[in-house]
Amino acid sequence: MSVVALAGGVGAARFLEGLVRVVPPEEVTVIVNTGDDMANFMGLYISPDLDIVTYTLAGIVDPEKGWGIKGDTTRALSMLQELGFETWFTLGDRDLGTHIARTAMLQQGWSLSKATQVISHSLGVRCQLFPMTEKWVPTRIVTDVGLLHFEEYLVKRQARDNVEDVIFDGIESAEPSPGILDAIQHAETLIICPSNPIVSIGPILAVPGIKEAIVEASAPCVGVSPIIGGKPVKGPADKLMEGKGVEVSAKGVAEFYREFLDILVIDQKDKSLTPKIEELGVNAVVEQTLLTSMERKKQLARTVLAAARNKKSKS
Ligand code: FO1
View 1 (cartoon, protein in one colour):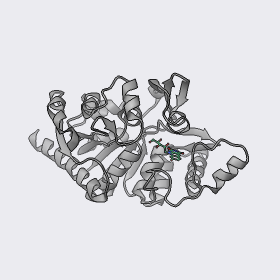
View 2 (cartoon, rainbow, N blue to C red):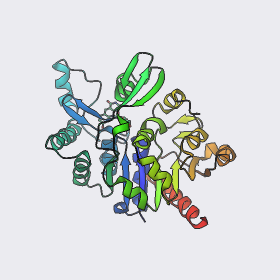
View 3 (cartoon, helix red, strand yellow):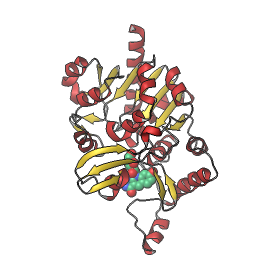
View 4 (tube, rainbow, N blue to C red):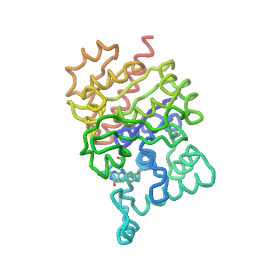
């Protein structure tokens, strides 16, 4: 059973924690958004979504925040503050070790894929994690105060600016990381994790060749809505969806992915949207999608896999 999942940060990582407990992790390939990456932040290459997925699957993530390492300290950051540097992006001491290691590997001439493999496997992650591309393609948010890097928009300015547009800088000339298209083509199940459609899954789909491979793949494609009752579970997905003219609802998510999505798993709160979603040619499956315990995470993964199996046996 080979599973390929497209993933952003915290929501995806929490879902994947359940998935790797109901499928052998070696059979899971995760394609991770790198639009949030900062290529030279205090001299370091930082890849927030790769970090989040890695730390979560390694069992070391800070469970409250969903990012960073549990129990981490910020002594280096305090020193940076004393030295007059900006400290709006919280880099923990152990977390800094990851960024230093990744940057050193890249400076040595290794690819981001290779660095990701070494870091994730060293921390005990058994599935295959891939950055969506090797190229740095920063997501920039066009706001009423100007063009902001996604992390400046989200963390530095706390998502307070009006979103006018979202740009995936340089994506037209990016290529999928080696191995990704093959994995999609040969997958038995394709999953779109419960991530922000615009800034987490959007950049992955915008890498030339990835969306096309998903459209052409024979495997059923199952998504999980990150919108419950018209609100995102976490983060500013609502503002970004509105900024891109996408309805902030599970139906809006189905519409956004309708070109390739076979099934959308929606929350029980959104059960009444089922007919509207199915009018779009996307089957809706209702489940509890708020991932408040490991049992819920495993149950959601089982529901996604069962929906895919059901679709396969009908086709
Ligand atoms: N998110 C925050 O809200 N504040 C932070 O200071 C912050 C630091 C940070 C450092 C390393 C890392 O890997 C992630 C970090 N995140 C932080 C999370 C991240 O900015 C976002 O949640 C993702 O980019 C969206 O998926």
